[in-house]
Length: 421
Image (cartoon, rainbow, N blue to C red; front, side):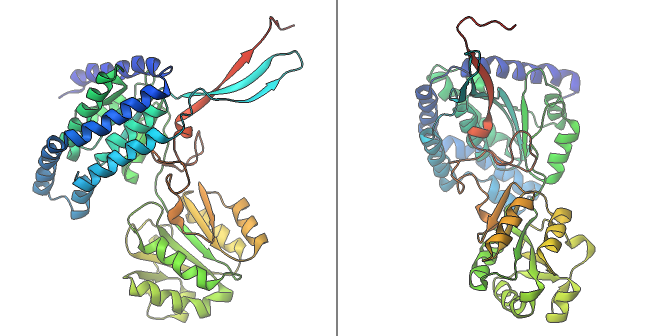
């Protein structure tokens, strides 16, 4: 399909989403929740249909040689569908942020000035592989009063179209504009290029996937993009660390799920503890299949380690590999993180309150942990209930994006006839 024939299709989807967003602005919490529960019921009732369509994607994926990991992410198993249903009910139970007026103040002239939380409008989600994101993103956007345009990867086309039918049926059955959640049914990359030019209809683009996808979206889009390039997360073991705490924290951060963005990728050891602690943590990590790549100072303590190359520093492995460096001070650790971190998650292990406070204050990351695993940088773990992604840029959100981050605030002013002099 050439660009000239794609333009009217994408333009229509975007215009319909904009129109639907107007009706969502005043949708009651009860109606939003009714739609969410209807989606959950339909997922259960249409499970066989969903899995039949998903099987088509799995079969094509195997023929194309997708990796086992990719196929696992693609599969809509009984457990995944059950998780989607639970997620919908959890979003249903979350407080509705829309319409809340906060920070009301009375001006000297008697005007009451406050700020009301309102939906962003139309959000475009671009994502790879996991078709469950179709439901998760639609649910969060709906609860925050936003219309959503969903563009999944070509490898999940049948699954995403099936889930879109479920979404639109639920919207229609509850009397809500079904164009509030649409899936782009076109696999050509040109469709994404065209969508990213629809700044008159779309308010925000959220890409979820590899660094290549996010850089492409950022470079192509005329619409603001919330970026999350990669998760290069570090733990700094300070000279005042409780090393009994350090070991389980490091193991959890690296080993529990090494292929996720909040997994540990770099370990910094203060020189005061390195001599005694590096052999201990290297042994524990080795038992869990982790390959360590160390700086020259590390190799002097443990010559059997693999020497870290230039491209190991700041690398997102997403695997059971970990780079280790010995540093002389908090200042050196901070300088290293400034150079190689990705503003995702940084952690310190220390019993020194002043050191911990300095780390929190001076480290630029969407989440900073003290004596806790980097794996806690997650919407559910941080009390948001759910998230649509993690932003490593600062406009307009920084860190996990829950319902609050899917809204903005407008000023509301109440007067009694005041005029400006």
